[in-house]
Image 1 (tube, helix red, strand yellow):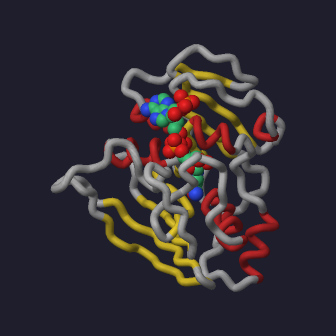
Image 2: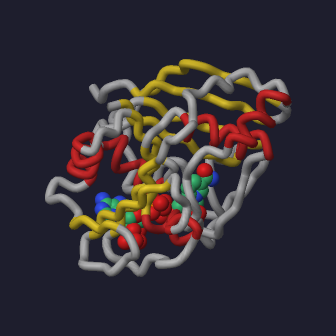
Length: 222
Ligand SMILES: NC(=O)c1ccc[n+]([C@@H]2O[C@H](COP(=O)([O-])OP(=O)(O)OC[C@H]3O[C@@H](n4cnc5c(N)ncnc54)[C@H](OP(=O)(O)O)[C@@H]3O)[C@@H](O)[C@H]2O)c1
């Protein structure tokens, strides 16, 4: 299975404000490009906090992709979207999650929750596997997922990178500054100590307008 992530970050690496509000650091182009990457996935995974801020379907919008093509964006090839559905997967340790929202009504979405405690949701809920996120990915693989897109946040992405479960990181560097000590960033968690920083290599870099769209390959630790 290929596991790849996508986030929009401010120049200072933040993905939201210090209050963890829902913000969109990226432009209309960045938001449309999210549809391209979703179209290349068959499941989209987020953490509970991201889901609480945005309990909406994580599926590609064909109109966005068409708009992006017409805008001349250089990376818009996607597989056929006709008749497809997407697993929208949320992991939670048990904080309260929204039980209403379009994610539960969109026929293209197959919602799936993994929770550390028993929770009632209007969708399938599985207990968090004993081996944590590794087990989540194994379960998705069993369900036929071949391309898994991680859409954050930094808490979740850190753990996945630390566990060497991420192959590729897509990031839009947006011409904004957010700042704020403790504001969520692309990768949070406890962080990598000196000598344990993860190395990346760049696969693609697109400049479009004032934004930079980078695709990085995650190298194995050590
Ligand atoms: N700019 C962007 O591209 C972008 C993208 C995504 C999110 N965001 C924003 O960035 C902020 C992200 O905050 P964040 O980093 O805290 O979000 P997050 O990683 O999406 O969510 C963290 C939550 O995920 C659950 N979780 C994480 N690891 C788990 C594990 N091993 N087992 C079970 N559950 C686990 C927990 O959920 P519970 O709390 O439910 O227990 C945890 O509190 C939000 O403000 C969001 O709106 C921005």
